[in-house]
Image (cartoon, rainbow, N blue to C red; front, side, top):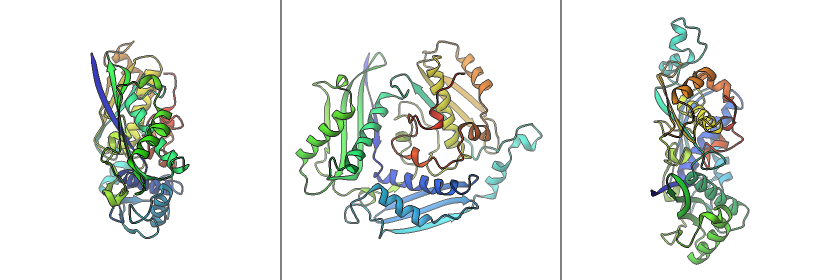
Length: 380
């Protein structure tokens, strides 16, 4: 049976990703000075203004406004007339400390309070987290999101290296892959929308994007005469960033994970320190799912964890291999319970998460980047 599946990615200049990057940059700034910092930082961007809000409890002193302006400059917008200007934009900071009601559940778990021999913080909130892996690509990610991320990253690369010197920072990519019997066989459609300088005509943009972006990334054997290309389909994309659309931390969660190919839990990642299981447990779930596939126990694996606020151990662990498993799923669950400490402290220590590593995760997906600790392949 043949069917189509689509995933999207966005560039680092997309207004939502700008906000994610600001939030993760603030988080890294605190962790670089205080590895025990509790950070839940969210950013809103729109019409030349940035609002940073949330809760931070830390011994560190961080110049948040300076971090924000440096991020905007690093991304590289045109200026206030078409997106945002790092020098002149207004920045509003509204921060408080973590609620003591939450802190008392995080500082020590319910199990520890009741005398169990568990030395871990409790989960910072209730929630469900998913991890996924499949054998469609070398990085064990779905092909659709893998290609979308590589294309959006290439858009940024040709802009920054001035290979295409008229591009702006804002952009989006969408890739549709045709599957035959659940195996990817060809790319059906590629959509690229990229910000550009006003004097550049559409034909030039189409030609350059196809030659210098798409053809450099998508394997030739996946393209054919029926592949459809929609490059700046509205015809013009000059105004972008927070001037074209508002931005908000945590609004691109499907871009951050598996492109819709697997389920996503209730929480976003960016701006949250690793005591927030929304982030850390999702990373651990990806690590385990990837290693289920890498160790040959299945060709495709989805894992779900669920936590209760103030409780260290997950209340449930769920494994689905979609009928591709080579050993019983019950055995996989047993291997997970024997190998991994799934308490917040266990995850933080195992993945070494109290480090300023989160800016690396923000753009082009939190998974499939081999330098990150949760992507390491192990034997278990």
